[in-house]
Image (cartoon, rainbow, N blue to C red; front, side, top):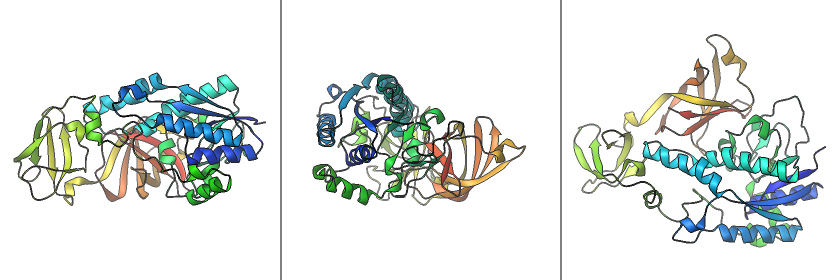
Length: 367
């Protein structure tokens, strides 16, 4: 029987309504606020203190206990250091996926299980699983499947696609069947009006309101190099570091009237190749991926000799799903052929797929 549930409280409306719904269901609730970033590393004050105060106010209103746990060291070692290393090597990582994989659904999960003997953890993510929003369909000997949320605009399964199966089996996502507008309405009706009106946080949490290029320069030294025009092969300007640019990004190049976009970054020569946004070289209809993480299990179509899996592909959180065919190269590499070319597929980013029934199948990193 599932009784003890630990809720990840962020100080926002989603985790607030999650806690409210769980309490109404009669679970024994404990709120935990995770501190993942040290404000002493910043010149400007981070919003973490305000978020904690909001989380405390929410828990006081709902009459549930709240504790704060410090994962600053773990976040630095297992998320931020990896991000810096990949940017130094010309890749474009996704810290949100790494944070979910290594912190929220690993360190926090085991903390909740060991400290509070939690039967489950719950978060305010917009996602569903085959076990139901409150694990009401839990089966001990059955793999759980990750499913897309009812609110397709807020669906966050892309960011959850690296969660291990054994953790996902004990996760509740009470908001999976709700629209964001309904969640805000519930918060207002519950007396959490100031939280319902709170501006939603966007982007990378530790960057805040700064330009990412300014932030990353605190940790990676600028290394000037050349912009090279893709068609002419001529140098057309200077950049201040390939770590500040990603594939498909527009570049402001002094003296150039037409817009240029990043096509390629060469780590050894420290050059950035640029061209027009509609250039065919910026599009591709195939890719090879590695480090595959099967959320439930490897599909039987790929276990067969010369098997092909027909499914849907996603490269960015809000991108539409693209039909594709997947071929197995080895146990840790897949070849993907897309039905339509995509713009600016980037090395180091995560990709994921789902079936026609919107079940998330796997996630991996692009070579």
